[in-house]
Image (cartoon, rainbow, N blue to C red; front, side, top):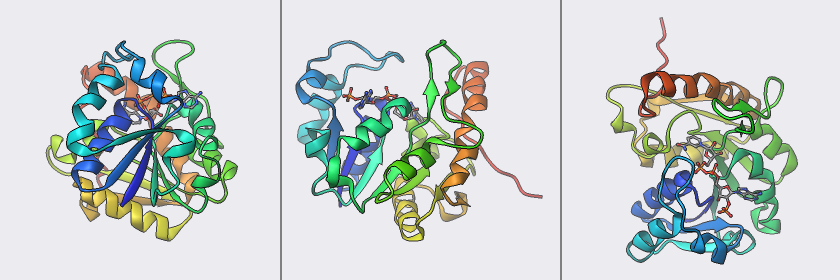
Length: 230
Ligand SMILES: NC(=O)c1ccc[n+]([C@@H]2O[C@H](COP(=O)([O-])OP(=O)(O)OC[C@H]3O[C@@H](n4cnc5c(N)ncnc54)[C@H](OP(=O)(O)O)[C@@H]3O)[C@@H](O)[C@H]2O)c1
């Protein structure tokens, strides 16, 4: 498939590399190609600049980089891997090229303005997934994968045993497609929990306050949630 990944951060890189490895034609969307390639500082988590990763990956995986407006005309599927605070602006910048498409939204509305731990900028009676769905009614939003580090998103076997990924969205066909992508990443059907419509993204986004505290107390992001039924 032709897939456009919005976002040049670590999540965009990891998802893009996985998709390309699975044989998809991947374009990464950014605000300004030249500026993104010129950045030479590490991100807030100490990950190397995008250009370093891109130079290592672009030839072997044929991953393209394009400004948002040029990134999605031929895309069959979109991934939102942008900062939650900026996701609406990023999708807006796609213009009409997003119309009718499935958007797998892995972003979280994290607000770091008061430092760590972050708070949620959309919460309780709303979620970023719903904000995106409301703002772009022509897009089929599927919220998933946002409750774990990106390394586990594309390689669930990093965590031994059974553990789960959640799915929220209004369009059944879009959720079926998203589940196929999840399975191609290594998720088994029994570990994909379909929570229902996009309002259920409130639940998964609101797992983030406990997720960041678990990361701090265990000193690692390499864990996931496992739901155990009686
Ligand atoms: N880190 C994880 O493992 C993890 C796990 C689960 C969910 N998430 C979520 O995944 C998303 C991506 O995380 P990340 O750490 O890779 O990257 P990030 O630093 O949160 O976001 C980087 C991306 O956001 C874009 N962006 C920032 N401001 C923008 C604006 N005003 N308009 C348009 N685009 C803008 C940047 O565009 P440019 O390319 O132009 O700079 C860049 O592509 C976040 O929502 C995060 O909460 C992360």
